[in-house]
Length: 247
Image (tube, rainbow, N blue to C red; front, side):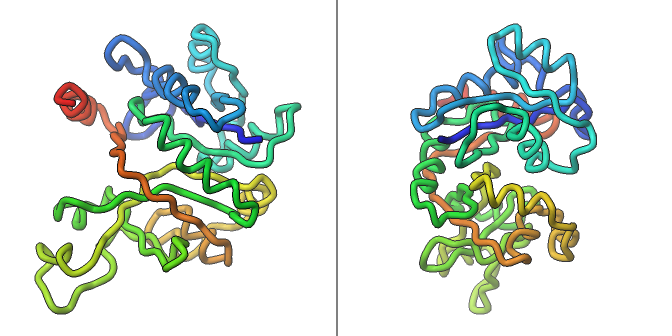
């Protein structure tokens, strides 16, 4: 049994009220919910929020809502609380980002397929870096994987370093990957990672997945060829809509 949880909070520093912003006639949170509900390997979808405005709006378009604490430091912690408030027991949880209104359901299914191996503790999506400017964009998190598709490290810097060439040519020497910020957890592992203190690597890069690696947990990476379009600031909306309109 796989539960998809969409964490949604109103008090975003860079974009307050982001889940309720209109995206081509529907709110962002409604679009994420509808796209997630189309995934074929998900047994249930809920929205986890700490805000009554989001809860009322979500209930109005038919979503199941779980109210959570406003004090969670991350979506992972919010997912753990939401999971424990449901009567149904689930083996796995997928944390679907609430700021990707055009997420493809196939991406969610790609991640869910990895969970069929019970040995998988944690999983996430990655994509191939195809544009050189992605390597220097600190908003695009890069990931290094081993031969088993387990994550070795995540960084905002381009890794690995290529000694023999200038940065603009690194892609000719190595296949780089970027991180698609959607996580899957085995529920027993989810409980364990929410009890971990902030780690030095996490603090340095501001990436919570480094806390898990630093504490010995493995993160399986599933490759997707589908692009994602995250909206982090109001300025991202016209950019994403332009891309979508061209497609």
